[in-house]
Image (cartoon, rainbow over all chains, first blue to last red):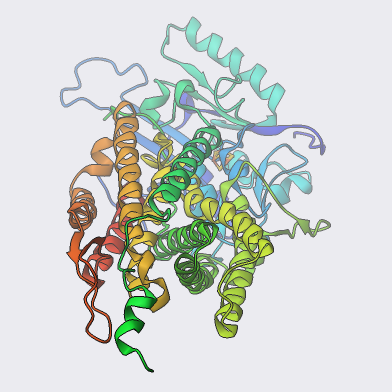
Length: 282
Length: 307
Ligand code: SF4
């Protein structure tokens, strides 16, 4: 049992190498957080959850790489399963843009949307690079994984980690999880599984993810932005405003020139005396 | 299947019709206020007469903006949360200069104040038959015009400060929206000026202004295209069916580039004919409507193609 003290950073280490795709995490999450869930989606593969959104705070991704002729060993790659979740980014795009202050960082160093503060503007949805947040059709505010904020306050670990039968989802203080993860990575590399890699365990992606992963392929294969693409919305503030300001200056100068008073008469040539002359004696 | 492009994996915020018309009206309101102020600074009576038209346009268009924004919220009654942080134990004003939506909410409040005062002031002056505008009115208008420039343009920065494809790949949107808002306003004010006797002499100047803004707009569209190329999202913004909207936006402003100079002999009420003069004629309702459609089409293409 992990001891949970406010002021310490908590998170998940999701080890995809042992995920069996049972979706116990999804069920436990919905049970605890009283999420009715969406209609199942039936697409190309075995994934009928679809994506993370306002109802799905855990989503087991099934990434189907099975070749048509399965003659060679898959090296753990043939079928990738990954229980995806809000990353509780250290530099969080969602928190950055939120205009109401509904998005906060809690005493457990997690990213939390206060449902009674959020007004449903959806700026965080446009910002989150992981497509985590959705506007909920029941509550009409933005919703996502809370890292079971209420459970943490009561000294309990999050529901998904508790339910995971393979310990693919591990909960704990982030520093301890990182140590565990690098140990696990060393073990896998020692077993010759060279493609195993950590994602978000160091600060290369959004300053470090409190919910980080051990992956069995490149981040792109899991639809995760790699370190080069892990950029924050605010990067566009300066250049966006600069371009606007330059346009404003040019437009004002151009406008002043175009709208200046001209010598040439513009439908004005009806000077008063000309009009008055013939009328004479009026 | 491994996806080839691995930029971001965002969800679309579903900013649709309310936001489109907000962007449109913000451009027109801000643009009209700016043009009105430029004319007010010119000082002569014809210019002041059009300037007041500008303030008359800026007011109703501004009024609709917060309504649209409120309706777009998931929880409309919490619109004021944009300004006040209601986190338990806080209840203090919230302002995040790095979040355009936060800055924009405050700017809209400030702009609302400027527009309302300028509108009432213009009304008062027209009622009392006061011809010019005093120093105070001019200073007020200048301050308001700065906010007006912001209101017309920041919406593009708002889109860019995200991780959405297209929007976040470019720096050109703020300038593009500003230029197109100004061009729409110039068309609208030019047309309105034709219908106000005292303002008629200044109507033609808007055609010249319109061309300046259209030129800026064109340059920024090119910049927009060029910034999307390295990001690999050009096809997304300009592919089918969005290319139709871009084409519409372009076609609608083409007639504005034709020469609108006419040789005209002014005929006085009593039949006296003045010497023929070269005049620039402000276009009629159709061309004005086309220019406004273009403003709308550009915003629609940008907003909808990314989502
Ligand atoms: S993953 Fe998305 S929702 Fe979670 S903290 Fe990061 S930006 Fe916010």
